[in-house]
Image (cartoon, rainbow, N blue to C red; front, side):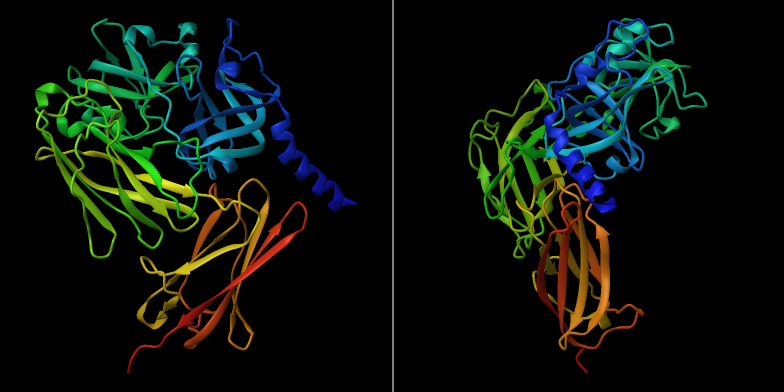
Length: 477
């Protein structure tokens, strides 16, 4: 009877999340209550938004795709913070709470990752006069949890003991910046110095009021110079899920390109793991690259580079300048990284590079297993030489699953059970590196072994299995 009840509850949680009305962050945050309390305070609701920042083992922020006032929400839930990624579109069921007047979403009872790799909402560009510092400004409530950007500001105070400092723009009204999400080097904050951009997420504390929290070093740009541009790789169409062996289009995007920089060319180099992701080509349609550049691929297929020269110069006065589209083809399930190694405008290196990723989910409830070495599809390795074999395993997302990996020798004897765990990855795929040792940490003899994966649906008890060989070779004498 107990197992029946637990099964029923698990099914109810997964099914129930899609049956409820789905709210936006704006729905939860927008209020006319002078206390700032959400109209859904104490209620259990379902909300949907894009993950904009993660505090590992603690919490994360989500926001509505269109951004704007009232568009952000703080989610306080450790377990869920460890399975989501920035750019995930998530659906959460939980409780709306007010923690010392900070609206937060907590007690998450169900979650669903709808899609991944989504572009983040646009920053809400404000004057410091729009969000004045101090505790007596309830009108700032509409910025709580929102991505906000201040531009062309001056430092008005050094960081206090809590890492908080004051800034202003031409309005001469002061706003507060905090180091709650990123350890801003105190030595870099000098009174009287000017900064081109300070941006981040707004939070609230009853003793200090509303404060802007940069998320990382890229959220603080001191000078509007060519080397401080931000170059990133994002999916062209985040609404369509990538599939195996099909091309995925990725946008190479830059912040604005000013005319006085005199940009006549750009050069880019990125790397992929060709056993997981291959480069298919480039697409210049509707981009700032008007002629197809000649690209170069390394012999190993892991490094791609090109330089584009423009006769008329490259100018784009706004952010999100689309330079070119990169076509890649995923070969395996899971997350496949596009490592942006270097980027230059003319001969000037750009400092802020953000890698891209292509995530391919297992489409159904099957046991998925992929074995190989780093950068090598072969399932052969030599532990005596310090080599390891990478065992990728998993299943589709959206249900409670457990994985057990057992390694047998050629006679069918159990050698090692390296994995016995719940699958908690947001992609449904997890990895284990086997060093060729058994349960007693002894190297197993050279020969043929079999890696057996069993995936169990924790709700229904259903199982799926798969097996692949592993060859351990010996060093030449």
